[in-house]
Image (spheres, rainbow, N blue to C red):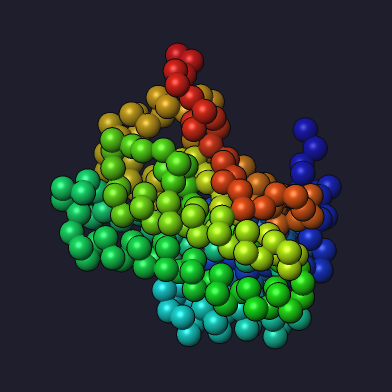
Length: 261
Ligand SMILES: NC(=O)c1ccc[n+]([C@@H]2O[C@H](COP(=O)([O-])OP(=O)(O)OC[C@H]3O[C@@H](n4cnc5c(N)ncnc54)[C@H](O)[C@@H]3O)[C@@H](O)[C@H]2O)c1
């Protein structure tokens, strides 16, 4: 099979900001966007991981806590000042801590922390990116939600699920509001991906992993590169009529009733 990263050059000259670029989906996406020709600005709270990602893609690292409005504004300003535009905002940083569990045991502090990192951050990043895109009359915003934004799980992470539902609803509304200004906003809804976040969760509870895999029609979790391919599509003009979408990349989970043995 031809390596798509070798032949696709859909983002030459575009500037992409990727939050949570130091690991998992963000790292794979930073690589893919750069391979398609974009200037990539890597944002992460983890200085070592974020810097390594930026070095790997020949991009810029801006240490950013995405829950801090001042730092988020500085991130998009740095992207603009360094490369002259903000064309793609992949608002992807998120957490899934073990303290966020069933509503019966999840405390208010854990609830609030997850809302801040997963949902408030997306509000802040969109608020900071949109003025640049409006001035350009062009932009693609991709916000990472999750398949749990569209379906429920008995293995609950209540604040995580609620935060991703919020990301989905906010993305839809922004996609509608700014569509006639040439800006598209989509919610990326990945199924379970083989990343540190999921591996850590499942290492602690293998039964949870097995329970979840039963529901995946393709019989495996996604690789980060498979999600990154969808990010590159949504970032590029190939998706010019895809807007305000609930963009599922889930191996068929959300469409399944009974899966093959
Ligand atoms: N892994 C999955 O199965 C899966 C499935 C659906 C959706 N998602 C979502 O995809 C996104 C990425 O997940 P991942 O699996 O790649 O996670 P990951 O843990 O591999 O990477 C997340 C990155 O975000 C960074 N980060 C955390 N808090 C931050 C903050 N306050 N400011 C800036 N950066 C911060 C971390 O340092 C890390 O580099 C998340 O929003 C997650 O909820 C993941």
